[in-house]
Length: 337
Image 1 (cartoon, rainbow, N blue to C red):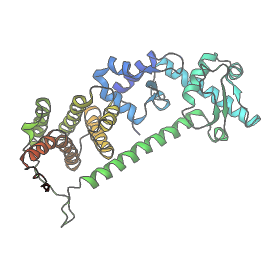
Image 2 (cartoon, rainbow, N blue to C red):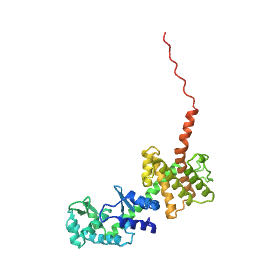
Image 3 (spheres, rainbow, N blue to C red):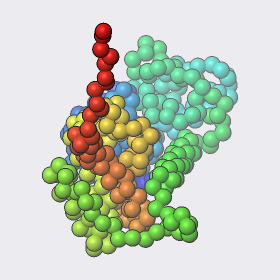
Image 4 (cartoon, rainbow, N blue to C red):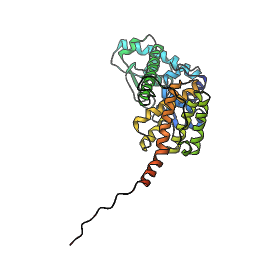
């Protein structure tokens, strides 16, 4: 389970406090700009699902809400339990029949606005069969529970299952990315089938890189000589971010930057998951104390060097080859008699 640390919980408390008591959420770019010193943590929480992004708006997700202890979060979950019990009873009485939100509020003795807010979080889990598009802007919002509502003793059990699915999805994604990375950058001796071990050398083209990138990359290789692993992983993430900003600008999250690299032709779509995995590994080292293995660090450096070589070295080399290649001789033309 990917538990939130105190820094993540503090950011989510701010996000929840700034969110209106509606389903509008907070403008994602404004929130990121206001808390840019924590942007890596924001990226991580968005990637694993603790921050939900919808139409460029940020929301605290249900699986994050259950880990928070501030009064508003506790109140939403308390109201959710009351509503879930009432919706179970409604389904037992009448199946396939929707229940208007104002009627639900009256039946449980809760303020209608609190009911709408709780429902906006509750519907992240698959216990319902139908619902209004918006509990706040629709004139007569309603909710229709499905048979699945009977399979849970309480709404807490719904959230436990949702968190379990979330954890499985994250683990499966990481395993799939790791498998893809290792198949692309195996580092295996084909004659023995054993992983090769070698001292990582600085690329001979490092001096041809832009100054900022060159400086960061030099620090990575200096850290390698001290047998450090977490710091180089953080450095890989920093270099990728520097390249992204140089090529497409500081346009938002890492995911947005990588997608823009693909759209602008700087990156192939099949290469995007590799960079995303490298970024996530660097974020894990920076914010969750992750120390990658030597083999994993080698893969991260393979990814980074491939990116840098393709963006900064090959274009110049190709131009030089073109300049050194003699032109084709002109076609001979037959004279007229």
